[in-house]
Amino acid sequence: MNYYEIGQRIRKFRKAYNLSQEQLAEMVGISTTHMSHIETGNTKLSLPVFIDIADALSVQTDALLHDYPSGSRTKMKQEISDMLDSCSPQDMHILLDVIKTLKISLDKYN
Image 1 (cartoon, rainbow, N blue to C red):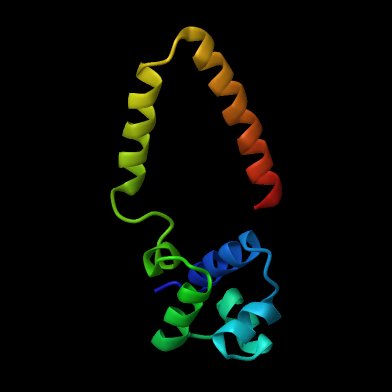
Image 2 (cartoon, rainbow, N blue to C red):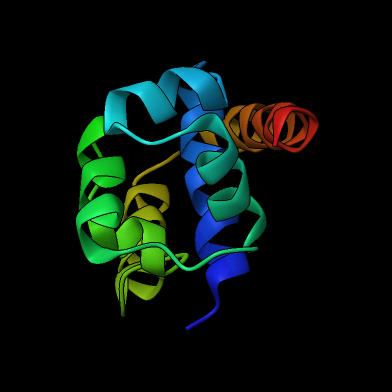
């Protein structure tokens, strides 16, 4: 189990909710220092703390353990492909522009 990667996923979700480490730590009932160590992978977190963090972030534990639940990435690609099949060429150009812009913004803030 890679605790650093789990910590980085916790950090990503925490930032998405605009929470500080101190705020999340308080919600979970741990110290800010402990939260910092969890996010950097410098400590192993207990199962109860892990579950409390997931609950506080309103995220499923799988999302903290793995980048994508098993098979979900393939399923999402297929769903996107199915939607694109019904688009006109003009729709496709617009969607491509939107996706490029969104990806730049995601990269900027992640």
